[in-house]
Length: 349
Image (cartoon, rainbow, N blue to C red; front, side, top):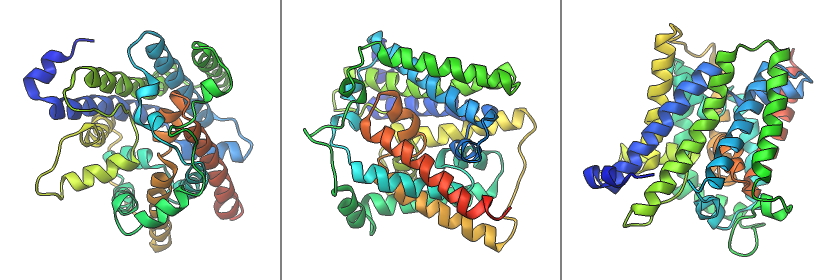
């Protein structure tokens, strides 16, 4: 991929932000139109329902695997160079952070990515929750909560100075991830057929997975031509939310992929909702609902930073390149969400 002309025209930092913007817009449009939501999928599954939310999530996850693994086989990216693979991972962080994040997304009625998409459609509840999420994430990254996060993360880390590549650990061939993704996709399409989900929604669901692949490919391409080191990354919302918040608060902000990603998602979701006539201002129903959402957002902010990623960052982006701690974090998010729904919502019905 020849992107040198872009870098020479606007510079490396601006190119990274532009690539983040492109990835975010694709993600925002696709997530808004498909109603992709891990929280909704876990609640359905936990209540023994294999409905449309589970089908959409499985299709998104599987197509992310297919797009990303195909890109790697084609030489458009190299997963081993991705930051989340090239640095040590935390098993304890994945477990504890995943459980906290899963609990938080049920209380907040949406994961961090879903809150951003809903906020762009006029949901003021999601905007408030998203701001709390970003503040707590920043506190967990480099603020008052960071020493506590570091202690929990250090309890159990991966060996060898790198994260665990699950694909290599279980002995899958290079094309094994692509075959696995295709298999899950076939199951997801069949489940979608039974749920009578329209093809348009299915296309947009796969578009969320495509956005993840776009982020990986673009940042990898930039890393090959940039003079300064460039992180190979893709869609995630814990770190980027904190970085975007600080971008607007610091005197000398720095452009990067994250700073383009978050506004891109907001713009994409806003345009998609506006064109479909779905933009509508909404607020909190009552004080109890507000307290619940604020607590959930705070748990997601700390849990996502501890787990090394949110429902998108760990659950789809990290999962698409078989990062060991990302798959464990995703599993724990499902467990935390299902248990919380059982204790808080299901028992109250």
